[in-house]
Image (cartoon, rainbow, N blue to C red; front, side):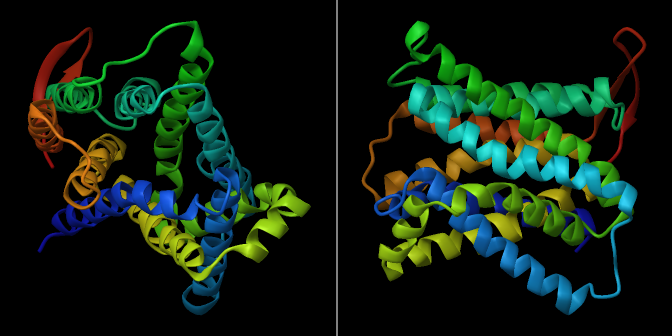
Length: 308
């Protein structure tokens, strides 16, 4: 099996784990506040990352000049990301959140192709991203519709900033994963991001919450730490290194697909024709964006095909 094929399978597993995170988080949120669950999750993940760095990367190091970018990515993709997301969720609807977050791969394509010029802009990437976004829109807005207006504006803008932040997190990390092992990069990012969260951890509210949680909540936090943070974040940057930021980003569209499927199959949540059509559109979009396509250069002129 080729390296690209293995990476695609790895990203598919990431999409599954991140898709299940919604249901697992609900279990953890029975006893913890959203931000407390995030702190516990990333603290556990950082411990695992640190132990694995000591065990397998003892003789490797990050150059001092690259550490400021690692700190920035830790704040961008870990600490501030979840704080902004949880705050935004309180101020807008779940449907709005799912749809706005789905814009992130489009931002990633724009940043990687037009702003930072890391990759070529291809027709397949554009069509695939739009098709997959249309599928997400059908799934979440098809039955209940979006809620637009002053009542959700603040939350919508916060979630939109989250979409931009994740796109930047994906694109800006490319230079680092081309220089260092993706696991090392993600380990340092996670540890640095968690350190910036620690002031929130050393509060009586958080300490008392952790003291009272049961084994099921600990299990939920550990699941999120191992699968969604350690494996998920590492494989995400692995995808950026092997496939590029744009092709990796479109796998974000599969996360809610798994979440919806799990909700329907195991949590008895309702599905409808919009769910079916939207799911098909998402899969078609991801497939299209992952294929080679025609490059855009010089005022939209099409030139030779971009190979995988």
